[in-house]
Image (tube, rainbow, N blue to C red; front, side, top):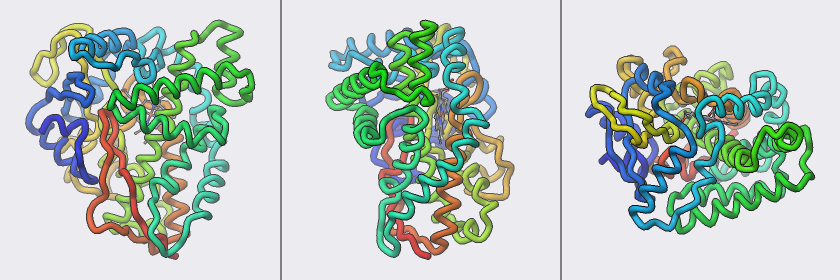
Length: 399
Ligand code: HEM
């Protein structure tokens, strides 16, 4: 059962039951990831989840994480050796002072003001994509809208040329599969692509990549490895996550009979997005942490150098924090989740993700108030160690 916490052949919402049962059973669950690496998955209530996410004894240091993962892989005789794609020295994989320094370089591109300035472009790209969708016949909303919209936006913010975005998407999907036979070559190819792009000197300085390269050259502020790690992080974190949230909120609105309500009252749209974030986030676990000393978690002492994945998905459904926590409801306070993390690594893109998702749901419900879900059963989810995203979402758009 524990291994299902990080993957398996699951349908939408099935992982909720698995996580909630795990949380009720105890705080720690040993899991072997598909690449053979052993981690402890932490399933605790909302308060303790937040405390742990901000606990500096749970390190995010890239070198320490890579050392432990490589040690385990070597013991298994694995072919996977270069983990730079996912565990490079980015802000996500660093502790202070590096963390603060790296985060400061990117924060301006994603703060509230920057995101508000992106709003017209998000409206426009969403409308363009929706315009192309056939009405009255089955479409896959994941492929047609949920993935391409955030990919275009993050591509524009960062400076990834439009013609390259489809290739980048395919490489990321392959890299995230966790099968080293395919993920390693995809990670290498993506690394080569970012290297060429970032070194090309053809980047627009108004894009984030353009600005980071200049910062690198002028002030020696980013090493080559840091620049590459930043590129991997922002491209991966900036589209897969929002795509998953868009698909989930469309699914939840249809599945809970709230689509027509949202069409009639657009004020409900942010409420639906927040309830989906609380109850049905595509991001199930915070990213890998490693203990720098023995740490007590929910009465159990975890030894030093233990890899941890903190389950943030079930923290939002913690029964202590929420009455009727497993139910999808739009009449509850909307602040009780840890879906964007907590503490120093709190998600840099939360405002962008919310705005993108609200824009899609508002435009879709307004234009197609009689949309229906097409499948006979709940759609399948693709689950890796961090995320559980709908593989496809068959819907029929109706005016
Ligand atoms: C539904 C959408 C999203 C969810 C649920 C989400 C969730 C998270 C979570 C849980 C973390 C903390 C990870 C940890 O502590 O281990 C995080 C960090 C981060 N997220 Fe997001 N994210 C989303 C969208 C985005 C977007 C659109 C961006 C675009 C830039 C982004 C960029 C980042 C970055 C850069 C970090 C690392 C921050 C740091 O280490 O200081 N995320 N996100």
